[in-house]
Image (cartoon, rainbow, N blue to C red; front, top):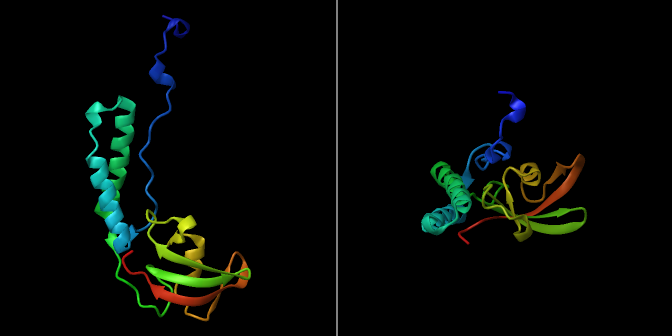
Length: 156
């Protein structure tokens, strides 16, 4: 039979569903980040997928696989000293004449609008290992960031 007369199924035209991509590198977490990840897994495990539409249940199970993987690979980092910028630091800095403050946290805990950036973010990478009063390069500009204060993040 010719391909022209073959009936195509609706499934052939659907986009494939992939797993939620995992951020590259280590899965470092603060105490808060580990707690939030555990809570997310528990909340997703508590959902009754039997009462859901099949597509919604698949999405939930996909998300649950992501968070279980993140929990299994989580590396709780020790609270840093406040000598230099490190994972788990809260940093006050000046960039382009504006004073700002961020906490350097894990990828899943990052929320830039709330002042939490991932340790893998360009801004965080630029500030790593800098000490209070030090200027660091950023965005191709020498000395663009001035580190004003460093403190350790304690459980939030």
